[in-house]
Length: 375
Image (cartoon, rainbow, N blue to C red; front, side, top):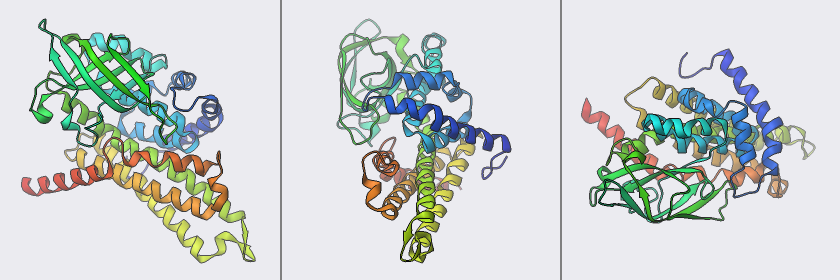
């Protein structure tokens, strides 16, 4: 298989996922409460066997799942992705005891995971973390500080938490911890955000953690975080592609049947050219996402650069396509409950989380110059 085509079985699987998203997952999502973890939806993802695939499908499989689910049910896509984001560090860096304790529940949908990296003063600059792990004198630490804009908070059952263990060491002084939600001193609150999925803040008031809670190595947490993001950034792009395709499909249907100026809306050249541009950009983004995912699965050396490119192009593309779709639909697309009104709210956040577009450009530039120096 090349990076630019899918096998027939993969194409059929994507079609099956789109059907599941619209027929089984969308009705569940509509019953959920915005801003809270939809445990019934998460459980259904587990029943369908999709959560267990987070750990077995590789980057390309993850991208295909996220793109296909996003086309029919963004809430289901996000619920799946957040399980993977929060649990991947445990899968990749956890001890046998940690994996045995938590991953089965993540896979069957009975345990909700979360990835706690961002802070009020450290969003895009992940190396500037101030949540501090103070040694407690007995080989463990006490976590003190705040996390903010954490998806699935405060409803998650455990958090992958990144804290500073060595002062003034930048990225080299961060450790990843697995912190169960019931640890004393850990509290949380909900944030009322534009996006409908749950996002909250966490407060750590001398929360106890031990060597048994470390993911990876002490002071090696930045590598855990960046390894996770290198995997999930292309799949954020896949989420964006799924939304862009949904907006494009809606626009094709609308402009083909909408009467305007003595014909159909699609017969106006200004409209047709906009639709062509939407289709072109969506397909280009899709190909870059697939290429980045395939490179990750192959262990290519340029994964950080490809991952950043895929996320940047796809999320910026989705913003453009959804905005154009709204414009071509007119006022009806702004009515609460319309597909495009929903996508318009959903499409904005991916350009910020897991590294804002500006951060992706910085990564691409640094990696490109690095490649020049290595020649």
